[in-house]
Image 1 (cartoon, one colour):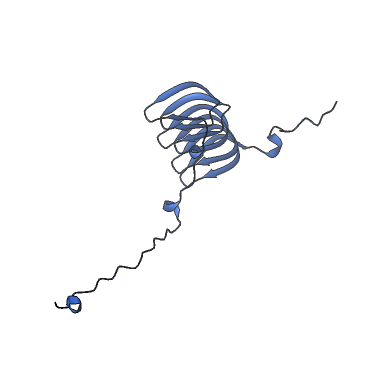
Image 2: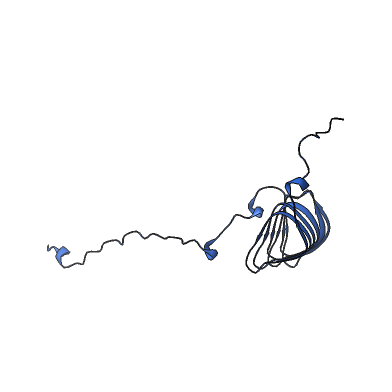
Length: 155
């Protein structure tokens, strides 16, 4: 028997490679309100819905909705979505088109593809480059918020 180890090439495993994510616009992934658990209504692409929507924690619009949204927390209008009507909610993320009366008690985000028109009231506003907002626009001040505690009038 001969020892072939001197003529056989030695293979060494490659050192482990590290993947490093560089933060930037394309790497940005925020958690969306629709990721939250709860009562969620999804109106898919090419679906049309009209009427009144109540007691929905999150409404995700990918199709077309013409409605009054009441007793709800979040509306998310996707790039393909169109909402026409009224909504009184906590958080709105608009990537498509919203037309009507919008009251946002916490944060309104208009994505780069979003268009919001009509009567808009908001507490916080974020508009990505390219996003559009037009109409009767006002900020909700702390004085405009309904008091959550008991009335101070003891009369």
